Length: 247
Image: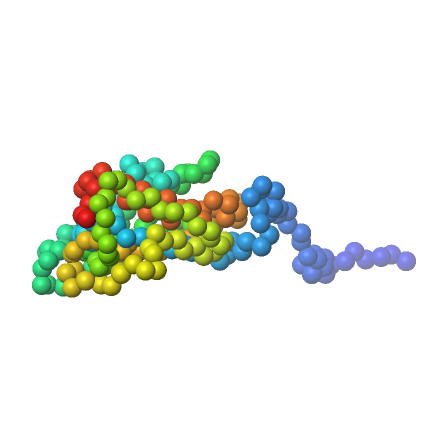
């Protein structure tokens, strides 16, 4: 008895029903010495830093909004290029006209350890009040990155002479939340009526999530210090630009 060969339609249906196994690269993040199985790289890491500095809000705002100067003093920032410049506000620091927020686009290059990457951020500036930078979603380095500086004039007594930059005291921090401050609970930090009087309460809120799990694992080891380092860097920059500040 002769066996007839299977028709082409039957063969193709058998092939389509057979699952194909594709070769995939393994997740190498577990091989990193910084790997922490409890660290969820999908969850943004957030850090907060607060400090009273002996400068006017307008002075601190000018330093923070000067993005093109970041490579000279900001930790891990190796390059900065303004893509769309910021339109200056017509309202001065003591003007009765309420300042309006304005935006600019900047390309920043960051480098740490063997990593180096450039990304574009939209920087929203509210004169003498806040500076917020949000990275574009198209950046290959971060899933999300947001940096927000706020400046609030406060009454802080006693005001002591300042001879140099005030260095923040290190405190413990958790993986996803860190708050350090040089403000004593007994300090009077009530807002003042003058919108541009020293000293100023500076608040930095930093939130980021790396796209690469290896980068996320490495960041968990030492990025808890980043917000503290950034505040210190801007404080030293203010001392360099304005001097020791107000008593």
